[in-house]
Image 1 (cartoon, rainbow, N blue to C red):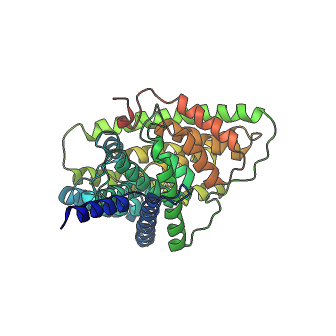
Image 2: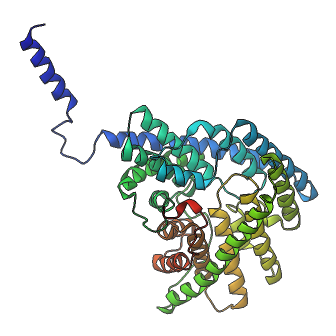
Image 3: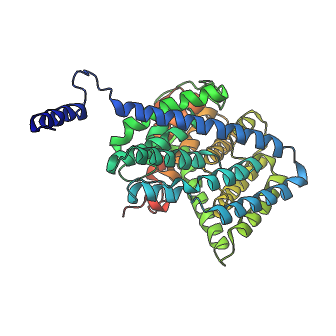
Length: 421
């Protein structure tokens, strides 16, 4: 080939390698990658949810004393899966990998996470499917990024977008899910990875679209709070007072979890024995207090529509906190955000029974926001999520409660990998 032709070929290749010049929009090829990731995340979430619902209906047949051996067997099976297939880790590992492992989430343990979490959640453990979905869809984002040879912040952003797509599919709040995937990574500077917000938002929207199409999800709130009418500026003060109570129980949950962690780690035992012991304890609690079984997605509505005595509400509150703590520390897999919302709703109902003159919806939503923000340190996404899930029309009281719970949180975070390092 002559030198002149070689020069022309190099010139043409350089032109082809450059971005298209005539595009007047912000839209680019990377948008398609974010959207494709969202579509995959929505499909994963939809299939996971269908499997979870089917398995839950099968295991819900066992009631009364039979719930104890059923949860014990499911705990043992989940532990054996983790022991032989691989330990998928928990939310601490996800945060660490995003922050310190260049945003890489390893997908090799996804089969272990999916199988073990399905058994744990469907049998009645007090953890929800949000953490498994975040792990699986986030690692899918990592895999897709490596497939397209992305590196550095681009790969990290795609992993975060995958996390957001999984979280959004479950909660149905694209903005809230996007912010949560950023806030959960760092407790002091929530916008440390702010450049990932647009990829996360795009992936979340497409994920929710596919998830809603698969399971025929509506756009309304899933928890039926009674109508709230703004009665004046004192409502903000009430929201802060209720949030202080919710934050106090957030501290109680953290200390309860640390206690059971020390119990389970007192002597080194195989993971399947820990999950077996946890299953027996959780089954015993569910036998005496059936409403504490499962993670609270449907049980919150039962709680709100039921006519429970004050004594029973206190018992449900205490044993639900114990159940979540045992589930977290005994090796069962799942997320604790929806269970914490259940605890917050119970606190709000107790406050209303003690002081009937206060607004029930304000008390419930304030306590739900405060305890979750106190434990997870995610005030912005908590506010948006609760406004979406409860249909609570007034945004500002929830924000006041979330910020109160956030600033009253213990200095050492519950998710240890959120600490400044």
